[in-house]
Image (cartoon, rainbow, N blue to C red):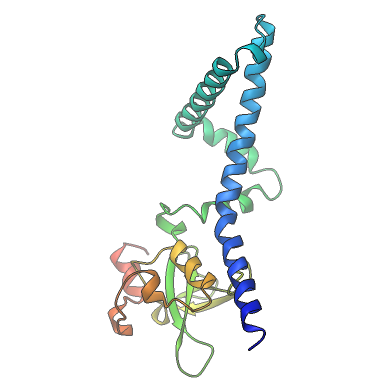
Length: 219
């Protein structure tokens, strides 16, 4: 009983840490990029005879405007073939493709063979099931088998990979990668039904992967 408050505090701190981590990384990246643009604008100010310290508001507006324009042109660049040539060069760097694929996992708009599915498979015990993720719908080295990852809780950066027959994989269509992350961080305090705000349903109400692949026109 004496350890319960400490255990609760530790678990809550870990949940807060991993909940804030993606936001922190995003904010740090944005601030780093803005800092580079701000430095460039300051250099331009000095080169044309302005003293940035005497025109701080104008300096801020120019830096902010330049940063927004940079993001806009980057967005246009991504839609052109030019980004494809740049990526072709980058893929020659060791580890670039792996890092890119890992980052793409957090993109909730992913579709096609790289879409992240939340699935249910037979559990470790004689009865019951586990909730896991399919990071792609590419067939395994074993025919009709697909890779399912079961993550650890509450720290989801570890886990196990299984090659499971498609008839033994059931898709939770309304669930997302973020829902699965919330479920892991809660350590089961929240049921998955609570996380996705859905009523519990029988297993046969979930489409098996074979039916899901057929419905989405996968070969």
